[in-house]
Image (tube, rainbow over the protein chains, first blue to last red):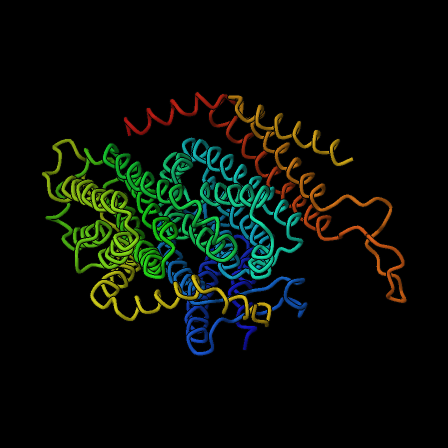
Length: 499
Length: 121
């Protein structure tokens, strides 16, 4: 049954190919997209179940034995991420039925989305460092095209910044992988973990760790490498930004956590002040940037950066509790932030603008929409008993145990700032009177409205459930974190031997 | 041989970095291409240079002489070149489209336009 690990790669790949064959048949492509993401969700949950029952799964591509061939590995962390990918993919595909325009769909929007999901699933599953680079490139090329699809002027400007920064990150990553191969003679992540314990960590190894840290930080938009994100994330259609912010930047954090807990635990501990400093500054600058934004999509882009800091905080602290907090927070962000983005898309559809000054008075007409924005906003800020609170609680607790009082203070302070700018945005959109010169609200066709509303409601429900009943999910995150910190089980699952 | 390649790699990185800090997006893309090539040569060099010893195992399965060349770095570079080719092709099409829509290849002009749009729209 280990071959189930290939399914998350085969499903989107096959769908993308079929979608390309059905070029110009929009209905076929749409149904293929929905079918594929539904299957992906089912496979994701089944992998999660199997990992719970049988421990870490690994599969060797082409049956080449472990350090030589390409290995796919699923532990609790990657299984959770796969499940989230399937669910978010499904929500975004349904949402795009109404949101993507005919031109984008006729230029291959749906197959591209599948290629993007393929790259994301590949990055979550692979146990080989060079293979990871390949999945990154698959993901990037799909995201490049999705970002530029439509060809509006502002999209072009956003795309050029995004492409340039991500190509630099890829060059860093490639150089790091090459040097690491030169030092250790292997690319299998589990084998690397063993080899790096045998050789002294001087000279090349810390340099490689720094190169990889920079490369992944650029992808994850960590301070001081975050500036490309607000410059490009506000330009593409909302459905595309949602999947970028929910999955693409989280892949960067996932890989950081994976590589630095498995391969470079020594460097992580040695570089703790650096990582924690970057985490704190990412939170702070993201929040300060968000406060200054007069436009909703840009505000949410900065909010994405700010939350990345909390995820990095868990890695810097390197205790099971902190990592569990990070993983929980990551899942929470995926659901809550996506709800915010999808609701923003609905608002933009109805009012024709996302500039806060021109919005207002929507509460009277659409109270459900107001709740759909306020609930995830409070959740992101970390108000109990919503899902963001539990993630932050674990992180703050771990920070206090690790005696990182300054960072904890920053994390709590940034929560207040987050609450401030999200609630201000909510008041601007829903509560204040509608400006006198504002255009008449557009009525949406009920089918379209439902296609956009149902995914947002579903994700809001997930976020609400994770907040009201955090115990089962947190226990899963705790297991995932234990597996990350005590990586013997991972190495044994891949190589079949104990160290 | 290693030291010569090290100089070449360093030169490529320096040239790539220099081109990337230029304002012209055409030069930036060239810089990125050089950076990719420098990384490929780096993999080649740190993968140990062996001359005239192909990574073939003879039919009888006995290697007559050691060391043979390591095939893995070559496979990695081949993959990286193909990926780089695809990405650079996309980047070239992108800068052509950018030039058509913006009417300039100066990165500064794109930034100002961006700001104006954010404030007015």
